[in-house]
Length: 247
Ligand code: ADE
Image: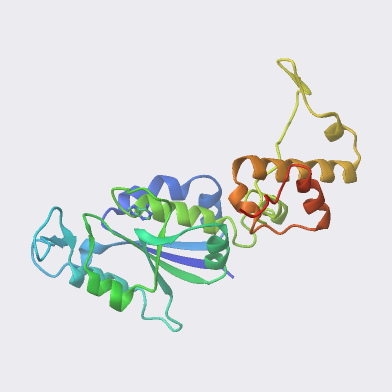
C-alpha cells in the first residue's frame, strides 16, 4: 500500500530538490509514496495574504496565525479515517527509528511546518495529534525536520529499498551498525579483516554481531539497555564489564 504524505509549509520551494532525487525521488516515481506539498499562504483570508502576527502579551518574533493554518490542515484532513497530523517542533517527542517505522505503517500522514516563533497554541490544541522533534537544537523552521522525517519514513515503506538493507542497519534492533569494507583488500596499508574474505557465513555473521555490540558499547552505551540481546550477546558483553554494577 502506498504511503501518502501531505506537507503544509510557507516555503514549498524548499522541498523540490531533496524529495525529487535519489531513493525518495524513485519511491515517488514508482508510486510507493505520494507526496503533496501545500502552501499555507494560499489559505490566508485577507488581501495581503498575511500568515503571521505579533504575539499577544508582547515579546520577540511573530506567531503563525490560526486561520490560514487551520484552513490548510482542514483541507487535507477531511478524509475518513482522518490522517494523523504531526507538527514539527523542538518541543516535540524525539523522533527515532521506532517512530519512523510506526509512521511508515500508517498509510497517511500530514506534516505541519512552523516558522517564526511558532504556531498559535489553539491550533495545537484543536488540530495537531502529535509533535515531533528531530533533535535538541532549534532550526529556523520545520521544513528541514519534515524532510528528515520523510526520508527516514519513506525508506521503510515496503518496496522502496531491499528488506535486507534495513534489517541490520544502525538502530533497527537497538544496536549500531558493523563496519563495511569493499575492494581493494588492502588500502593504504589497512587490510580488510580476514574473516570477511573467508567465505564462512557463520563466522562473518558472528564477527559482525560482535562489532555491533562493541561499537554500541563504546559509542552509545545508553542504547544497550533497550537493545534486543540474546544470551550469547550478553556473554560477549560481560567480558567488557557490561552491564555495569548498579551504583
Ligand atoms: N523546528 C525547529 N526546530 C526543530 C527541531 N529540532 N525539530 C523539529 N522541528 C523543528
